[in-house]
Length: 185
Image 1: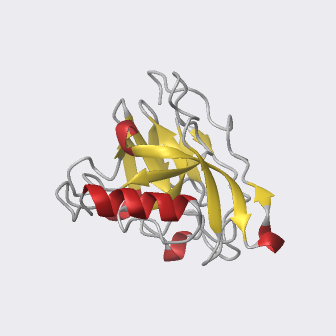
Image 2 (image 1 turned 135 degrees about the vertical axis):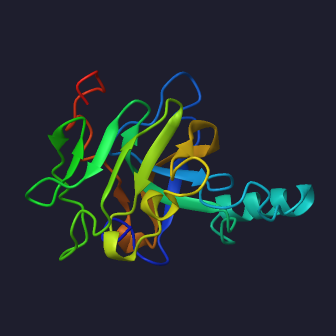
């Protein structure tokens, strides 16, 4: 997710952001459980006690999160058509090119060509450091076609909380840059 996030950064995750009817939007940085989309559905589970201990320690910044948790940016939501790329090398969502100022310097929107209609109730997610990101593009041929179920979203990453010199709000710069899905998309 560089340059937005760096190795060792700790993010503060708003776990209530999507619990009361709101849904992830394009541009949101989300944390999700990759089981069933980025990993096999039966990927190693910590068990109840170890899982609670890991979640508690992770919430306090004392331990690493689960190996099944990912941080990515939402590029497409249910109903969107996302493709790579237009003549200028930009991602296109519902026929509109995205301006992605958050991309890692020197990266292109994607070296992998794709054209997908995101199923309802799912997300298409990508890292900001596209040449060094394992994201939806890497899981196109798997069940779910690289998309993440909304039910696996843990929350929205709102802040970088550690280290102190990196405290900053994580905004959604691309929110609203592509129109809602329609029959033309």
